[in-house]
Length: 146
Image 1 (cartoon, one colour):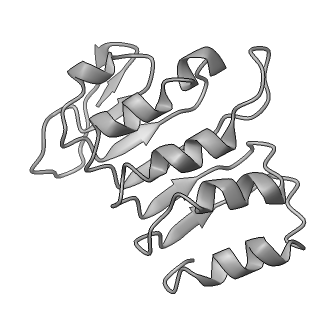
Image 2 (cartoon, helix red, strand yellow):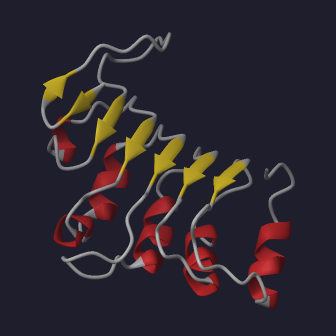
């Protein structure tokens, strides 16, 4: 696991690189091992998130994404860009967007980039109304979603 460029001890059994969990901003995308499967985009300046396409392209084996990033002093996160970037990571099965200030339209944009592999979605502390017909239809698209 790597955070802020400092290695930490991890007890997760894995057959992948010792840097299988990355926190964006701690490492250049070209230096992230392709077998990285967990990525956290929390507490990242929005200006860096403009490179989310490049980042996701660097981690094609990504399965878990934590994106606890709402509106902050740096501006708004473009959830449409996150959804488009997810198209580059077809194996994502877990997304945590807790406390991101997501609205129905934002969640729909994220889900438009997800494949049927998505089976766990954490959305706590968001002002979701779940009254958009398009969003409800998209949620029904994922047969194993919890």
